[in-house]
Length: 468
Image 1 (cartoon, rainbow, N blue to C red):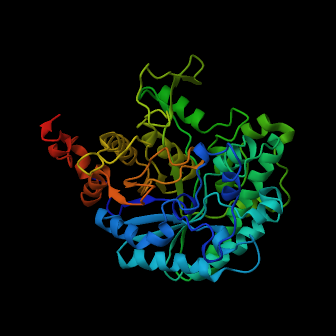
Image 2: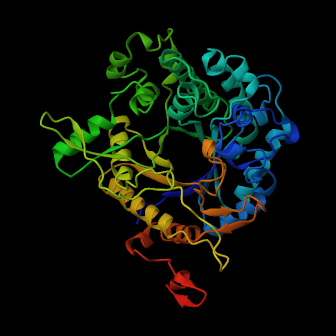
Image 3: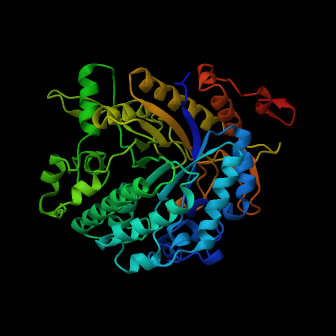
């Protein structure tokens, strides 16, 4: 059993599920623009319709209620609220989030609002985007509009989601929106400005919220986990997880130390040298605003052991090791050690704001969607998360990614992460076996995890009357 008050939820993001790309005054986003570029997205898919959550949110909330979710993490689309990135607020856009929030509350589901999940307005990008130092002020104004409308009912706020990805993959590698390949120095500067935006957003929430807020953020959790429980292996894994040892953006501490300690880590500054940002007076104080929780998005990890000198040495996974449909290694241990290492370093309550797997799901001949791999994956990860709690880490909740199959960025619609199956031709929703199982996990506060096959009716393994 998890601690009393543990939050069980699921999440989504605006561009991945909403659709209605041109409805009610919504502006263009960098993801709309990238999807129009030939060859950037699998089979030319886009988010114009996505799951049509914008129009079907009542149906979706009813399914969440059936699952017994405590909380739903959704993101607000900046271009739906401020189509030009700055300036006039689009009332019709905010009205949607008003309706969604009310529907959730009526169903007994707590809304957790993410302010930025990658969909910057194209107009703001064309005005310099995150390379423009003024971008933090634009984001603060947008945050103010959302907080003014929703904070009489919303108490839980997440500023930004995964800066490692939208800066690293979007501005440096060019695989995600806005699809550019900046020199490393400029990409680091864009990251610095995005962290300033995070800081200003926290300030706005605390100053303007109508109900006492709980504020956090949701970076990628890059995890190296120990090959054994020897102290040497644990120490090596911790040091590796908390290091900046490569010139890329896959780091916990480059962003985390800035947000919590108000400084970039010394190893990163040494490695990046003259390419590192040169903060202006007050920048780091602005970035390091007080947070109430630390969100972590963890899917996989790497196994390491202590070498002769005590530093981490990779322990390569065995041939044929389990992988998901995106070929990410299944590494349940990452959900024990990642949250534990973060909690130890930053002394904040931790929530798992994303965890899940892409699977090859389809509607079976019996009309159901059987996804035993997702059930097994999630059970293994949650058991490891429970170990982190037993180790003494302050873990407050778990949000499964994602509530439904959706637009999976550059992978289009070929990868399915959802607890709810979406037929993208008809938009019909079907609760997968994993959704029914997750409902039992929630109802038992994790107690059902102790039984490997709990929640799996043997009829799930019968095909046209013949037992499998």
